[in-house]
Length: 87
Image 1 (cartoon, one colour):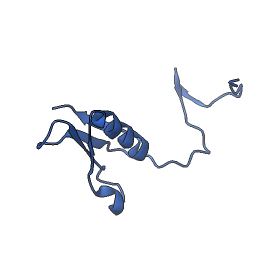
Image 2: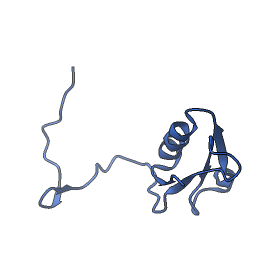
Image 3: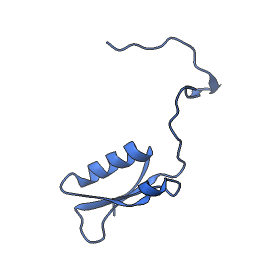
Image 4: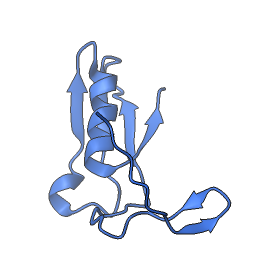
C-alpha cells in the first residue's frame, strides 16, 4: 500500500516546491555524456562529468544489444543525469 505525506511543503512560487532538507545527495550541474563508439555501433561510452571525483572520470564502455539502455541507466544512477548523443 502506498502512503502519501499530508504535510505541507514549502513553496517557491506557483507549482514550484523545494526539496526535502534531509536529502544529502550531491547535485551535479554538468550531465554525463553517453554516445556511440566511433569503432562500432553496438558499443556505447559513458563519460563522467567534469566535476566528478578522479576514480569516476574514466570512460565506461558497454557493448551488446542492450548497450545503449545499460549506458543510460548507468549514467543516471551514477551521476544523476545524462546527455545522450545518438549519432
